[in-house]
Length: 69
Image (cartoon, rainbow, N blue to C red):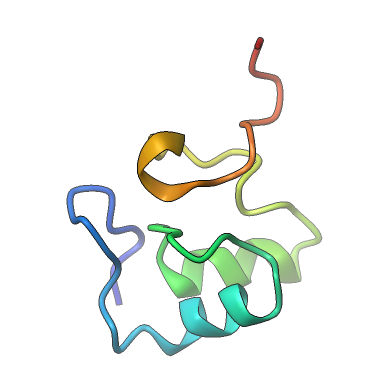
């Protein structure tokens, strides 16, 4: 699996860990973070969106932690 899909318009449909992260509400529906990366962060107690560098206009994610509005 890929660590992210930032260079794609949508994530690979066979990324089951990302589907799980979406279904459980950890990441938004259009998330482009790889499922293994997203669930790994969740298992560490971190917010996958918090440090993600994806363009929020593309993925619909929450604001990056520490970012100024």
